[in-house]
Image (cartoon, rainbow over all chains, first blue to last red; front, top):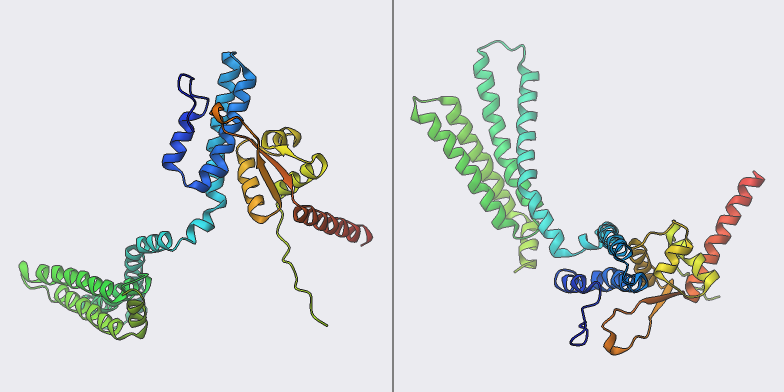
Amino acid sequence: MRPPRGQPAPPGSWLMRWAERHCSPVVRDGVVLPIVADLQYEASQAGTRWLARATVYLRHYAGLACAMGYHRLTTRRTALANPKLKAGLVWLLVVPVALLASRAAQFAVVRLASMAFYQAAGPQDWITGASKSVASVFMGASFVVAVWWVAPRRKRVVAGVACGVVLLWAGVLISGAVVQGFNGWLFAMGLSGALGGAVAWGLTRRSAHSAMNDSAFR
Amino acid sequence: MVPVPETPLPSLSSKERIILDLLASNGELYGLQLVKESRGELKRGTVYVTLQRMETKGLIASDAEKLSDDSGLVPRRMYRATPFGLRVRKVWAHAARMLSMGEAGA
């Protein structure tokens, strides 16, 4: 919307150009345009009085900011109905959920072991080492399964990547175990984690849910 | 007997109710006029978000004011309640009255 040549741009012209560049048509036509129309009307009513015009501009720009925020809040559900946006948000959750699942599995197994063996006879470091090794199996498995479960698409590929991460982590543990004198429990934890991750990956590969998901997105 | 299909009753927020009441009593109004007539219940800017939602629901309709092509100004929109909007307003007002009668009689 441009004024005829030689005439100054009407109030709100910069706002209209900004809206055309940065806002969706729905927001531009439903929110910005009516406010600009009111701004132009009230600015014409204010005439040349600078204080009155400044008040009009301030009031309408503040109103626009509130309207944009209110529009965002009230259309939040509509925005989340956008499949691409929803998938993007779900992808962001994959790693935190997987780490949380892994941590939860470790906590559960170690807690169970300490409850089961708290008065057991025998060296405590054996019991601690054994419980941590068993926990590593479940940590590796839960990490892979959680990534596979949360990923919105390409589940098999994503589970493979997660298994790779688990194997990398296990490799770090194993190399740490052998570098400065052999540490049996650290070695066992690394091996157990790798085993858990690999078994979980094998199970997810065979899952019918994976097959359905991947064929839907081929 | 053929059952009559039920029209789902659209929800009506307090602000939508105020807008419908104002349009029912005043006919057609601009957005700024709605804000002024509401005596602070409606706010500038956010009123247009509500009006856009009501227009999507079919409760109100709007027409742009006629301006000359060379003015370079954005036309303001004049809003009016649709017959459907007026019926919805009547139904909700009736429901509110029935509720208050029930409470008074209890």
